[in-house]
Length: 451
Image (cartoon, rainbow, N blue to C red; front, side):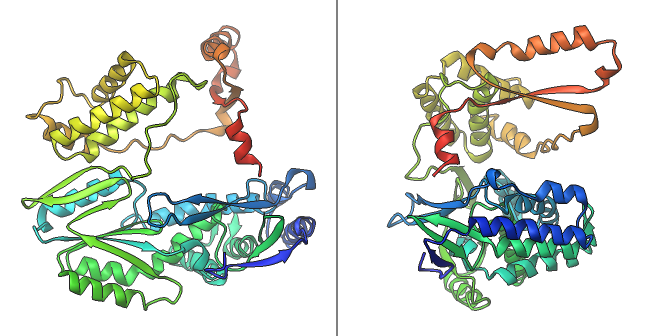
C-alpha cells in the first residue's frame, strides 16, 4: 500500500455515513439541475441499509517470483457501485469499438492475429516481447484517467450516451473515482490515486488511458512490420528487430509517461496469457500454457450445478486446445491432459467423449482428427466466425430465475409445458419466457460477499 502512495489512512473514522449522504446529495443536485432524469436518480440513489463499505484483500500471484500480492477492493455494495456499473455499461462498448485493432480479450484472438501476421513476416530470428504495465490501476492520476475518458468520447465525436450528456458522464465518473473508500485491519482508507480494482469503471478508465499512451508505440511497431496487441496491462509484440534495439526502444517508451512503467521479457520462445509461443524451423508453433500455480481442480461433476454448465467444461477446454495447439502431437498431449483432469473431477468417460464429439460436430467435422487432417480442420475452426452476442427484446421477454438444486432438474421442461398448455392460444404467448438458474447459498458465496 505504501509502494504507489495511492491510499490515505483515515484511522478509525468510518466514512460510510458521510459517503452515503454525499452520494445522494450529489445525485439530487444533478437531478434538480436536469443533468439526469428522475428515473436515473431513482436508479442510482442508495439507501443506508443497502450499502456496505468496500474491504481490501490480497490475491497472491503464485506464478511470479517472490509471490507478490494483487490488491482487490471488494465493493459489491459500495455507495458508488451503481454509478460505476452504469458508466461502465455505457463506456466499455465505445472503447471496444475504438481499440478493436490493438486490443484482445482472449488468447484465441492472439492466435488469429499472430498466424495472419506470421504468413508474411515471420523469420527464424523474429523476436517476441511481453510488456507488463506495473501497478496500472493505482498509478494513473484520477484527473488524468477521467480526461482520458473525455478524450475518447471527443475522438469518437459522441455527444451523449443513452440519454446522458458527456458532461454528466464526466461528472459522475469523477465522483466515482474520487470516492473510493475501504476498510482494512480495522482501519479506513481513501484511495487518492488510480481506481479501485473491483470497481467496474476502473477497467474502462485504465484502458482509455493506456490507449492514448500506446499510440506512438503502436505506430512505431506497425511501421516496422511488427504486431502489437494489448490485454489490459499485458502487451504482446512480435517484431523483426535486434534485441538490443528493442531494449533501447523500451527504455525510451518508459520515459514517455511518468506514470507508466513497462516491465519487459523478450525471447524467441515466450508465454502470453495462456498461450505458449515459439519458432522452430522458421515455423510458428503454439500450444496451451499452464502457469506453475495451475492445478487440476475445476467444477466437479458431482457439484450441484445445472448440467449445461458441466457440459461446457470439456467442450470449452477442447475448443481452446484445438485453437492453440499448432501440431497434432501437442494437441494429443493436451487432450489427454484434459481427459485426466476431467476424470479426477469425477466426469464420466462417456460424458467426456460425448462433449468432445459435440464440439467437432458443431464445426461439421465428420471424421476423427488424425495427423493428416488436423491442420486443415484446425484452420477451419480458427477461421469460423465468432457467434454474435444474442440480443433480447426486453419488452417481449420474461426472465424467470430459480435456485437450482437436484430436485429442480426437470423444472424447466415442466415450466414450458405448463406455459404452452395454459398460454399457447393467449396473446401473452407473444412474450418469450427464458429460465435462468442461480446457485444455492454456499460457503464460497458467503466468503465473496462478506469480509
